[in-house]
Length: 288
Image (cartoon, rainbow, N blue to C red; front, side, top):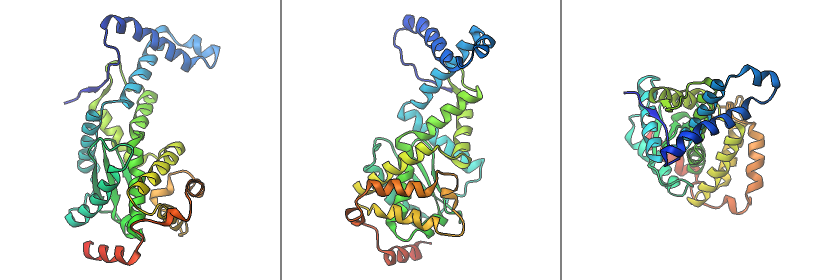
């Protein structure tokens, strides 16, 4: 059943009745005052509708954790049922990845929501996240990692996206740009489809990737993993014949590596858990 996602900020109905139009006009006006011709082309109704869309977009990107988790669950079901996402039925491998993820999630900047870590049967080197704590890791990436800390670094990066609600912000911007958000919010089924689209086919902004890198490497360290392994894994992935899917639509990897190096002390960042390659490979051989 379709239902809109909308959050009300103002408690007084009387105040809300007069304040929403004022905010709508002010916000919409700020978007269209780039030229006189453009201002003349917009009616008051256009301004009101535009302003309402912007306000509802802000509300969408700041929905409650409970609604975000609910939306993430529905997106997950859509990805499996409609997009044929091949979630692995290897319970032992999934448990291993989930244990790593939960260890990181507890040390993340957003540990107040439940996290779900799933393995995708796909040979491509990739991982992604949606809202509400859902993280997906391809078997190709699991095999490509040299050790557990490298695998954990990717999962920590995806947790960083969730911590900063990047998927929700991306969805909000798209809903405003496409004009599909109304005064009552956005239709639930539309939100689910948008979430699935961004999870599978839309790159994140450069700023979002840099932010997820920073949060990810911080979380990695707090969880006891060797932070330098994030840099090692990035360098390994860019040294091949082609850039893997995990990095192909993201900002320039060399710049990301430089930024990460500037954040870390090479000596202390190499200390930590999960750096033994033989232990990791032996573990995978027993699981895959």
